[in-house]
Length: 73
Image 1 (cartoon, one colour):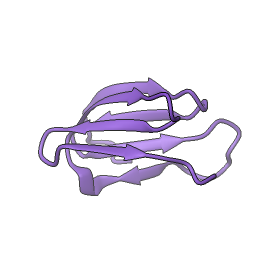
Image 2 (cartoon, helix red, strand yellow):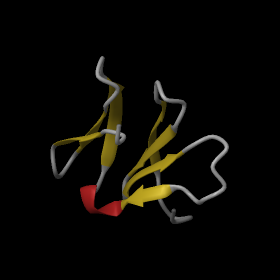
Image 3 (spheres, one colour):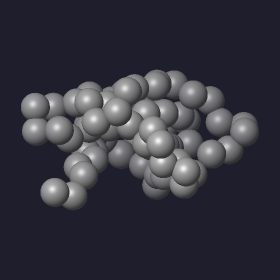
C-alpha cells in the first residue's frame, strides 16, 4: 500500500478478512496471516464492499464497475 493513498472504505468481511478501499485500489489482509496484504491496484478507485450469502465480497469501483472476491473451496 502506498503512503500517499486516500482511504475511502474499510470493511470486515464475514470470513474475518479486512478490506481497505482507496483511491488507488483495494487491499485485503487476513488475521493471523504474517504475509503482507494483497493489493489490487488494477481496479482503480474503490468505494464500497458488500458480503453476499455465498461468501463473496463485492467490490464497487468508480472507473471499472463491480468486481467480486471469492475464496477457493
